[in-house]
Image (cartoon, rainbow, N blue to C red; front, side, top):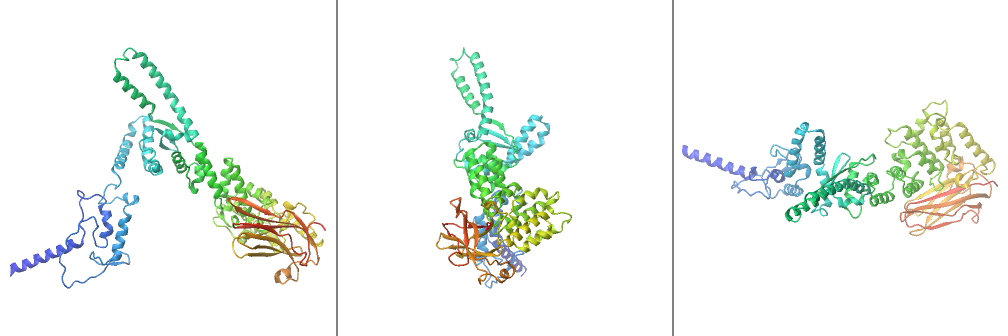
Length: 616
């Protein structure tokens, strides 16, 4: 009986051992399996299975009454069987997905107890070991040799970066070794001299480095001719080796250096510029265009420079218009300067005024745009709000969110009241900017009261504005002090982005009501015109009819212009009625202006209606 019990116990232990070996994957040894076997088999080992590359271990016979209990997989909310069953579809799918992704570069650099060395290629490990050796022995070297070792160390540190950047040039330089080393920006760039002639700077550096070597070769050739003239015919093998040596000396590696003083030239941008030396057509991403433009200017790489300029022209937006303008002025690109100014003329109020990028707008550019006759705005008060916001951002450079108009008013209202802001030392530099505004076009009494309370404009300016309004109301709307239409007309605008097809807005000037209209008839056919509205028209709101002054004049002579601007085929197009003078009455025959008709295939459309009441 004792022997029988001992046999049963041994059989039970063997069955348990067989069952354990069935469901636990066998850990391969370092002698038979590669170092990355653990990582590749991990997705399948986690659900309790084996990787496809591992051999299946025969399973032990299961008992007849087998029960399957799920266990929790770590701290996740997924439950799995303790056995590697084929019915665990979720675990199998996750394992297959993880196995297909395989090992990325980040995962290869993980060092664990099982893989004490990096899983990258062996040659890179050897170079890194050599690098540490050179660091240990660098203290024993001379200053010149230390400098050479430092350059070698920088080059080895950037081997991976250069490999990624110039990966597409491997086919072009498959049978060629780099024969030029460029020292620049703390890097040692390995290049091929046949591709350097696209850059005038690099070609000049290369020529200046090759010429002294050629002179030395000529001197050595002259000495060798004098010494070996008598045995010239006796030793042809030596002559052949000398010829081969001369050819090798002609193509030996040359080191050139370039000092870059432009702070816009970053290492990444310079690497992209060098990469384009190997390409037939320049390729630049829009996010790197500023740095690459600066690098192309330093390298004197014309095709790459023009490619950057064309990318900048087609990609102007609120985030980059200010930086593109500064770069265009720096590198004297007049067409790009014009495009940036043109974009700001129509998008200063609709887009840039509501974004934090308004802070980067240079003062001279803002002043130039404000004086442009092509400037689009919804009304003159919107321009004042934009300029106040720009001034606030200049005074508070740490603000990262565009402030509301009420916040700006509270800020200027909190300043000391001994004099207006523009009369102080901090505000005198902004006087020319606010002189470019058409402040006489701010007619609302509420807006004028806000300006008085914040004590921003000088008192003489506010007095002049109110005086102009008083005389205009007393003289039936005549603007006697505003005679230059292109610089003093009061502007209103409509921005057409999408549906509806019918756009209208009612405006009030010195007791006269007008309706500005824009109608889209077809896919690209538009009509723009002005129509006078009678004071008793139900279209007027109660607030407008109650608070605004009303003129009972049956006719009013008006000088006006309707202008529509849009972007067509990458160029700004302008449709205009020119400056017209017409008497507007209250009857249907005389209440409508001339209609501006235009075919505009693209949106948005910026429509400006300019008014000026001459003396009558």
